[in-house]
Length: 160
Image (tube, rainbow, N blue to C red):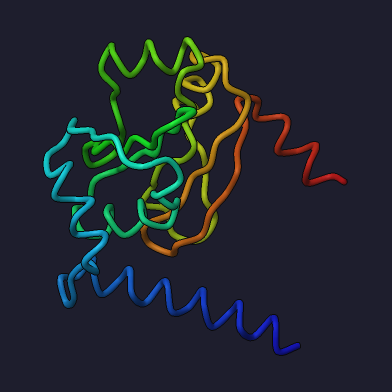
């Protein structure tokens, strides 16, 4: 029972901290500020040490900027991509690296309240890069959802 209340408390804490950042009441911590300093503008991207960027970091970057962010990962590095308000549009270099499997789309952010809903574009993009699944994290709630390129997988998993 204590374990569940810890999870709920942690979720509520994340949601409150994301809201405070979105509203400008507080700023990002030092580590996340340094990440954002390397990708300050839409369409900027930068390489980081492998495994150094967490999915939750993206939510905080999005809360601060009101833009979507994506985490791409290769064998030796993480890439943070700074999108625009409602999507991430990768340049040809990143698209080629994704299509040739040198990078994977680990996660991206959405401004979803409550249930996280992958868009048709999200699923189509996974099909385009021939990747089966990825993660969406809401920069409103901090909740994460793994989704696939096939909408019917959601119904199959929900039915088990």
